[in-house]
Image 1: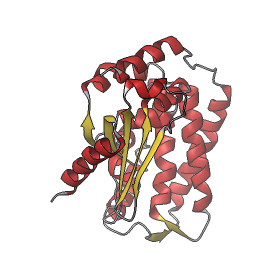
Image 2: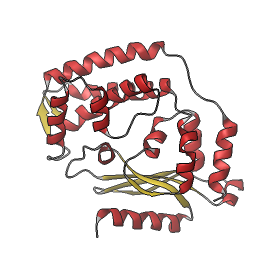
Image 3: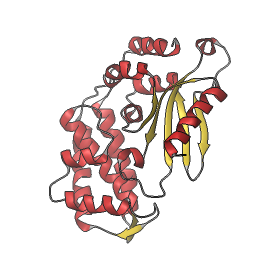
Length: 252
C-alpha cells in the first residue's frame, strides 16, 4: 500500500477514534517544502472540529491531538478553536498548514474560508516568526561540519521574510518558489546543489561550511532584523469574524 493511502486510512481512524471531523489534513515540514531526504518522516498536521455539543460542556476538552510519533510518522492536530485563536495572533503555522501543497484531506469549508483566513496575516508577526527561526537555527552553522538541513532551516525563513516584505502576503510553502522569487542570482546555483544533495542523503548528513552561503545568510539576517524592528503593528483583531468562522466549522 502506498504511503498516501496509509495516511488517508490513519485520518479516517483518527476521526472514528476521537469522534471528530477532520477539516484539513496536510503534510508539513521538509516534504511540503520540497527538499525531503530519503529517510525524512511524514509530518502530518490536521485541523479538526468536535461535535457542537462538546463545546458547550463545562469540562474542558483538550484542543490538541497527538496521534502518532515514530521514525516514519509524526501526526498531530489542532482543534478549530485553537486554530482560530492562533489565527487571531497571526500565527504563521496556520497559514503554512492552510497553503501546504500536499493535502491528504480537506473539507470544502476550508476553501470557502481561505480568503478570510489570509486576511488575518500580519506582516510584522510573520517577519518576526521567520527571522527568529533563522536566528535560532543559525547557531548550528558555527561548527566545522554542518547538518545540511540546518542550512535550509535558515535560508527558507530568510526568503520567506523577503517574500513578506515584497508581497505583504503569507509566503508560499514550496521552497523552490521562494528561491526563484527572491534568492540572489549568484546564490541560486549554490542552493540548487544543496537541494540535490539534501534529497539524496540521510537527514543526519553533514558537510563543510559553504562560505558564500554563510555570507549571504549573515547579510540577510542583519538587513531583515533592522527592517523588522521599524515595522508597525498590523495585526487584525476581529473576534467577531473568527467567531462566525468557528460556528460555520462546528455546525457542519
